[in-house]
Length: 211
Image (cartoon, rainbow, N blue to C red; front, side):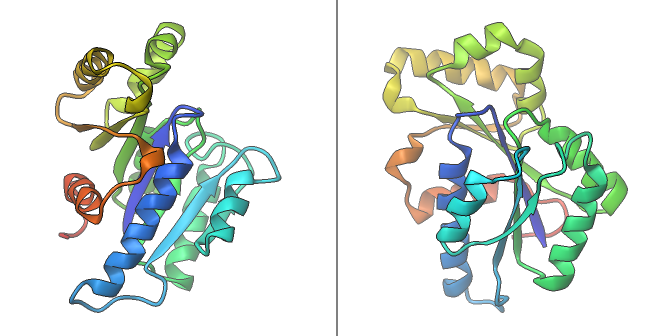
């Protein structure tokens, strides 16, 4: 089971990316020349409120969704995270588990918990909001660092809402937080080709198994 943690500030476009990436992984499972599971992708949603809007949206799109409402899985609900991952593996054993963290979570903490308490490796796909980049960095610099510093791939979203010059500046600043990450400008609402998502998948550097 390959685990991908999706992180990013509230409003950066995580759920849109999650749905597109998840649909690609399902298509991939049906076309790859290999044995696939009945449930190739399961999504683990962490929402603070009891009524999960993202959960309802994903379920209506026919994704298999598990939820954690008890608190943020990077700090107060680490036990729930490990229990949920174990349950998902035992129940569905999907090829991919996509974990969408809350907008205020620390993806590197989630990866540490999975490794240290559940014995699982994970990759991090993070989103940065090009339109609000300067505002967020100015208001919460340490939070931005924590969200991006250990990401394997960083998608700089909303390139359609900024000038090419602004996007170039944001890309350079984002890359400065983690020089080893793949930094890719995107417009999530436009959608992307399977070739694009395959590039992202290959860049996620899974430690637990080779793609």
